[in-house]
Each structure stands twice: as C-alpha cells, then as structure tokens.
Amino acid sequence: MGNSIILITITCSHLIEQPMYYFLCHLSLMDLCYTSTVVPRLIRDLAATKKNISYNECMTQLFTAHLLAGVEIFILVSMALDRYVAIVKPLHYMIIMNRKRCHVLIAMAWAVGFWHSIALLLMVLSLPFCGPNHINHYLCDVKPLLKLVCKDIYVVSILVIANAGSENKDKEISVFYTVIAP
Image 1 (cartoon, rainbow, N blue to C red):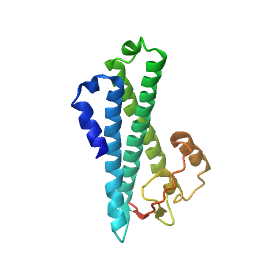
Image 2 (cartoon, helix red, strand yellow; image 1 turned 180 degrees about the vertical axis):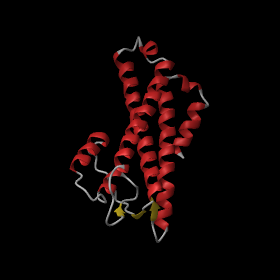
Image 3 (tube, rainbow, N blue to C red; image 1 turned 90 degrees about the vertical axis):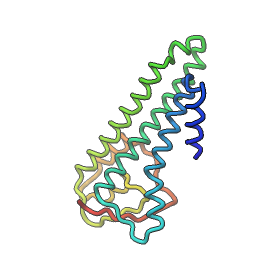
C-alpha cells in the first residue's frame, strides 16, 4: 500500500522531473513487484497443509525473485550516485544527472539484474538433484536448493557467494516445500 501511494504521488506531481524522485518512483515499483511475486505464494502456503511447488515453478520463482531484487539493489546504487553528485558537485548536478543519464542508470539496473538472475538460474539448472526433495525455506532460493544436490558443491558454493553475496537469508518464517521433479 505504501509503495502504491509513493508511486501515485510522485507520478502525478512535478517531482518526477527530479532525479531523486525518478529513482524513488522506480524503487517503489520494484518493491511492489518483488513483494507481489513472493508474498501471495507465501500466504497461500502458510494456509495449506501440503506445500508443493513444481520444479518449473521453483525455477521461475528463483529467477523472478533474483531479477527484481537485483534491479532493486542497483536502483539503490543509482540513488546513492545521485546523492553523491548532489553533494560533491552541486553546481553541475543538473548537467551530470540529466534525464538521459537517469534512463541509462535504470536500464543498467535491469541489465545487471537480468544477468545476475540468469547466471544463478543456469547454474542451478545444471546441477543434479537427487535424494530428498524437501527444502526448509519459504522461497525457492539457491542456498536451500543446494542442499538437495547430490554432488560436491564446493565450487558452486563459492560461485553463489561471489554472485549473490554472503548475506544470511535464514528467516523466522519457515515453510517446508516439496519440489516436484519435472
């Protein structure tokens, strides 16, 4: 609701002309899209007794979540660059942060987010899964899926840390998914 209000307020006013609000508008849109891809499935699965997700749905959720989160992160980086330029070069701010540069930064956020998520997806698709097909997580993510792999994942784990970072994604909410093979 909050992101929708921010989005409507900024797009309906003249504030959209300023780079800071332009990025804020895109950030609100990404946050709205990201929560719309994760939360409905989470609510459905919390209410269900049997929590199954197909392999294709799991891979789609993995790709979409990483795409939107990656875009959101790089929009935040663009916002930081905008504020840096505003503080360091205040007299040249409007020349440096023009509309074209803002569009390029948003396009770069989408491109980098896409390549991040496609790299993770291709890596996961190349892994052999065997044994138990239950993950203790509310989202089909890379780290829980790596526990289902039946080969040495030392190199893959290093690639995951290099690509996605070493953040701890253990959440208090836990849903046991059964990933159904294709």
